[in-house]
Picture (tube, rainbow, N blue to C red):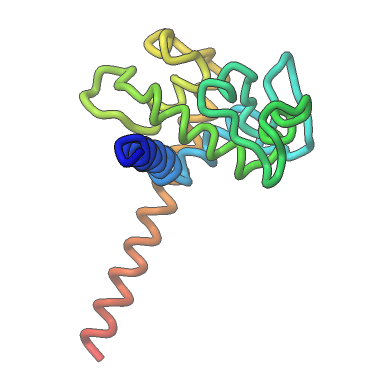
Length: 170
């Protein structure tokens, strides 16, 4: 009896560690998600599915299943509408992509790091095709957004640095 209880408890600990890992680890930055959204859908949050890809991130059924069938609060992952509801909810869809990248994240462009460019390729082309070339218009929109976000972040850092210098002089 004690052996069974010990086995059950250790199983629960392993499952809770796996669950916490997938929920806590978020490899995709907020700015990367923003640019993925911009390139995929123009961040149009109208509930829509196009050729089986739904929401602002154009999440597919297969991706949703692969990343753990996340759902909105209180909804069963087995209900007919759970995929569409999650994909059309920006937070649920973003969390789904986070889990997807925890599972499939890799260096797709051979620059020796796993980053936003890789996550974008994995999401758009799949984890086993992420080294192929993306369509020009999509890639152009994505990279233009990334450059804009980087410029804004650099400007913000410069402003913060100037404010700190002014405080030190005062």
